[in-house]
Image (tube, rainbow, N blue to C red):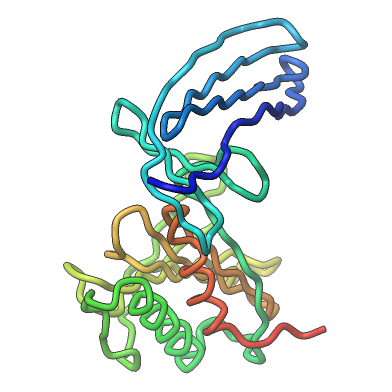
Length: 240
């Protein structure tokens, strides 16, 4: 592999833990050609707790994403951010918020719109993957159940429905209701999750009753840019 980037770096990351104090990890990367050594020193309140070293080989450069893939000797992979000069996790989450005119999260047209977005995102991620299903199919909501009764929230209840093939790619909808002051159940939020996406990939939309919603997604880091691009193509322009 020619024209390898320089991955040699030393940096320290830390955070404060209310029970332990200041916890930090010092990371040192040294490089010799394609071979990379990664040393981590973990400390609590500047006192050494543990350290370890792993070695691997630079196996791929993702130029557009600004990433170098390192395959460790045990077969695991990690990634180095060429711009920030630090390691990144293999799987990362992205999140975007958006607004829609409809305030009714039970509106069939609204649900069909979001399910259509999930279909489009899935097609963009895996073009050979069969993801199409009828977005206008009437949803059959199941019987209500109380998922948080054991955690001290017996009043909340959920209803679920599925759009698509239950044994293949589909969208699972979880509708949450909570009682108001008159003990009547009112909509709380609605979660739409894509089920059956490529491995290590997830996409979910959370709709609320006040018009501001979020979409969250997880993917292998090398596919993150494509996933975020597919999501942004669906979302309406943000209002100022």
